[in-house]
Image 1 (cartoon, rainbow, N blue to C red):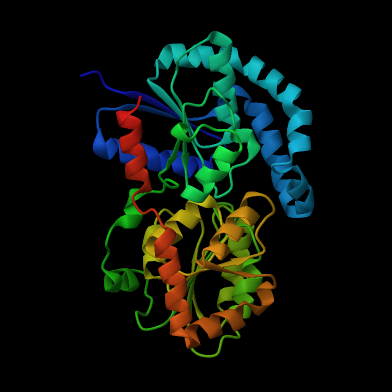
Image 2: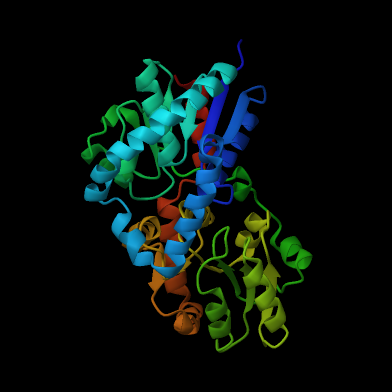
Length: 372
C-alpha cells in the first residue's frame, strides 16, 4: 500500500494555526506512522520578507489600535476591495507552489489558515488540478476569506460554525464538524499529586492558570496584581509565552507578592498545568479554547482582541462555558465569587464539557487518511 503524502500549511511560527498543524501531524503519525507529512509555513515559504513585515504590522495594530483590526476583520467591503490585490499575490505565488507540489506530490493539502487556503485554491484553478484541499477552521466564527469553490472539505469547530459556513454558500456536503485540533497529549490522564509535587505546588489550594497565548499578550501584570487582593489562599501559574519583557518584569516582582506564583516563559507542558488548574484565565484563541473545553475547565476572558477573539468569546459566553471581564483590575472579585460558589464553578465546567470535542485531532486525522 502506498504511503499517503500530506502537506499541512499554516502561517506564523508562534500561532494557533501552527499548533493546529502540529496536532494534526501528531495524530496522523499515531494512526499511520508511515505517512509522509510536510508541515510548512506557507507565508514564509512564498514571501519570507513580506511575512516579517505583515506580522510586525499586525502586532502593532493589535497593541496600539485594535479598533482598526476590528474594522478590517471579516468586513465585506474590505474583502471586495482587496480581491484584486489578493488574486495578484496568489498569482505570483503559484510558480513557487507548483515547484513545491511537483517535488512533494501530495495526496492532500490541509490549511489551518485562510491565506494558504486561498493560495492553494487559486493554484488549483490556475492549473486545472484535482488536488484535494481541506480547510481546517481554528476559530468559532467562519470569516469570508475562507470561502473558495476549490476547497473540497471544511472541518469546523462546531455545528454552529458549520451552519454559518453553509449560509455563506458552502455546500453542506463539504462541511464536517470535527472540532479544532489540539495536541492529543491534553487527553492523557495524569497523576494530579505527581504534577503538584513536580512543580512544588499544593494540591489543597485553588490553582489559577493565567495565559496570554504564545506571545504573552493581554493585561497579565494587572491580573496578577489584582489576584493579590483575593481573600483566602490561592496559587497561580503564569505563562508569558515568548514575551521575555513580561517574563522578566514579573520575575522581579514575584518575590514581593504574598501569593504563591509559578512563572513560565514559553513552555511545552501546558497540558500538565491545565490539568491541575481549577480556573483558567486566558486569551480565547481557538486552539487554547479547544484545550480548555476538552479539560472541562472554567474560563475567564479579559479584554479579547477584536476579530477572532471577540467572536470566540461571544460563542463561549452564549454556550455558558466562559465569563468575560472588562476590567482586569477587578478579576479578584470574580475569582472570589467563583470559589465561594462551587455550583457556579461546576456549571461552567459542565457547559465546557458539553461543547468540547476532545477527540478532534484524532477524528481529523482519521478523516484525512480516509479521504479522498
